[in-house]
Length: 349
Image (cartoon, rainbow, N blue to C red):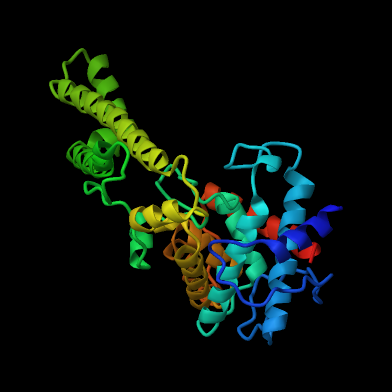
């Protein structure tokens, strides 16, 4: 059995805990349409008109994503997962994510229609469909929501100092997130107090050298040195708190499965970002809102998802309504890779 036949069989036969059922779809061989990319998403885009077309689109897109991964990532460890493809049940995850993604597109199309293929390309870059992905900034799940953003969309997230329930592992580490925030505030106050040291270091160095060259003493040098040492200690403490909180999240995800009913019940109470229903539909809504705010500019909308929509603002003549790609190196790379993912996926549809 070749890979396409295997995927068709898996799609038709899978009984997935997060899939709500309905008639079994027939996987079509192709979907009409050019893979050509237009960075201005049309306001009146229609991806399907009937339930049959919706099912057909959903599973052809799923097959295209899986074929893309197979073609380009089967020979090495998968990004984020750090495992070979043979050890990851990616079909199950892609099918489930697509179910909620397509529902989200239908729900939020009045805000702005979002291309499902672009969203799958985006999730691929965000998490490679790994539900327990945890970023440096504590973004979690396939859509990589931070806690403040997730809570604004109604998701349950771990509180910094309040265990979700008695099942928590290492609950004493839950407060490390609040500790990190307190350390950030202290560092901010330190840098504000010693602004000439941290903000104008080149001028201060020049002053110090001139004072030494003139054979004079610099009484404030000791205070500056203590401030630098304190900042170094704060940085070390922040690294420790960050590592501890990430470990707190990971240890409570370890060994669990979103496809296991008992684990699913715990995760619903502990951190809903690792699930699909709410996060995936929230991602669709956010991207729809960003597209509306940037007149369909999918590049600016996507950059906004990564760095905040305000960072894409460009208040100058014709460019103002559309915005720009955020001029951060990480965001430019992020948008570029999603564009390539999208093109590769569309070519396989």
